[in-house]
Image 1 (tube, rainbow, N blue to C red):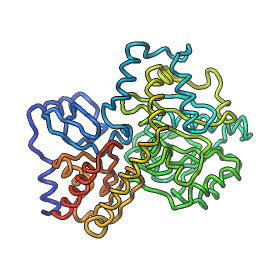
Image 2 (image 1 turned 135 degrees about the vertical axis):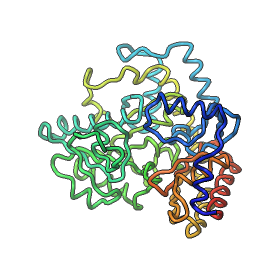
Image 3 (image 1 turned 90 degrees about the vertical axis):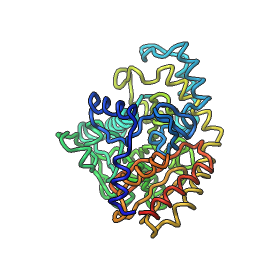
Image 4 (image 1 turned 45 degrees about the vertical axis):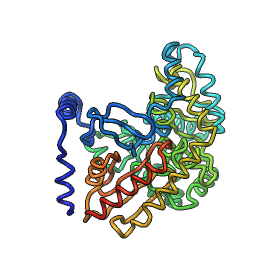
Length: 416
């Protein structure tokens, strides 16, 4: 089968009347800020989802790592249901009986003194930026209005105006200027470039330990340790965006753990809400977090009882260590399965825990075509940057599930 044949056979599938109706209504009434695969999902259980026509699919995207614990996880659903019947929102105008336990648990997990809860991952990144700047002015002594933050090329931290201000993705930035100033982009993983970019105005280095949106891109071995040492030496905050890479996705609780590095600020989201509810937070020690004072930052829903109840249970599950161990096992299986395909349709494979990025020979097919071909075989995944496909199955996926994914990719490449 040629790339043209594959494109023709997968981009125009025979859709049922029900599926077509859902897609047409969504396209008519919802803004076109995504380009979804033509599948309409209705149910989920564990690593599997079911569409409106009753067809089952192995979910190998897991809500961009938000569903690390699987769809409809019994423990998380039970906690959410119980809390839904008690109290869901108070705003931070009052204390609630769930936030204290969540804050203590998340501090215990991160080893930090304090947390600041928010909702979406982008909000948590914005919070880290604000805290870093305020720390720079009030603690480090940077002149007012001059704080700078070092960011990485190829980054993805969200889509707010400030965050896309330091993106180098044309699609994310086109048409949204003017942008927020105060950021300096350097090559990802280049410790010398970071050192050269730091000056007396620098308050933080913001980075992803693994760049998920880029296709599970990892920095050189030792980069995290070198960055930790550099930030300490130059009195700059090391700010790790662990929204996708953290909470067991990479085979450890945090991706920074692979080099035994502790950043000054952890940014967390996605899996922190168990795929049930938007929950995010940053964690830092008191000398950093104390710059936040009443009225200087806030969120109506941040730290609400429902979010806190779910987040507390997520931390309890992570403290057991079984999800981290399972992630590592899945990673070993993915590496063993995808590795031999390099030179046989794949140009590169990157695996860290239950997270893999494969680069497909563009003469064979695009990442979108691979995703469509996998969908036809009952597997859901997502392409990025043309010829790359990312896989992030829920950590409850079985060995048989992962073997099926590897077999499908192998057979699709062989037929191309």
